[in-house]
Image (tube, rainbow, N blue to C red):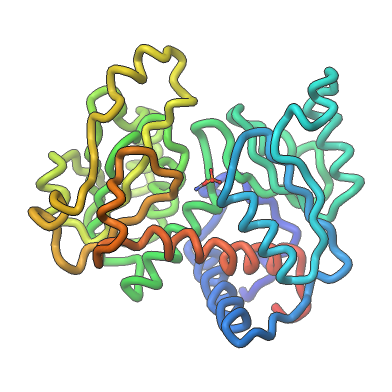
Length: 314
Ligand code: CP
């Protein structure tokens, strides 16, 4: 099928992609990494403009997209807060997207409301990439997560995954599970405080796609896992701050805990940012893979931009 399935495509929901799409993307990302390490990146997107429309805070997603675009020779326009746009003067979201559609060749969007990226894709003629919408989807993070696993273990298949933390509000979890359902994990274990369990609609959806979920105690999950995926409690998504206070600090992955229970070959991933759920003393252990994960965001997003915008070298 080749790279054509990616051309001019929106990236909104991980369920829109096949395993073959992801394998094409990972191979393109490998190519981008080879170019980055050789210091000779083909400027395949020269003359293109990428708009980053971030209505919600971001460090990694926005800046890695911007770095990716610039590495490929594209120009970047955009904003990193709603207050910096005319939305603050009352302009509608739809009108804002219409403007960007006229200014750029591709829009990357993040918004606190679920469905905002899908709406943007309906309005815009240019491709739209979802950089996170509410608690719903974060498709490029899931692609990056699986690309990192492939880099660490040589394959996404056949591994034992433990997902720890805020399974209810973390969009990275919903997207990772949907992306994992395209592969053949040996097991997918979930460990979360009672208040932060996976939402029913996500559970039903991924189970209907053949993913078998196991609910485990943290120590059991740690002892069996190859990939330990930790998430932050998404304080900003709680409708009631008092509910957040009830779960705050309810789990913490530390070096001591890993050394007591985890396999020596296990790797800890985290989409970041972290707060207190992942101790800094894990950073210097062999378990730590989250900084590699963050750094692979640039070649992975270079690959996405190149495939969607039809960069010549792809
Ligand atoms: N992983 C992630 O989405 O990080 P940012 O919120 O910093 O973009």
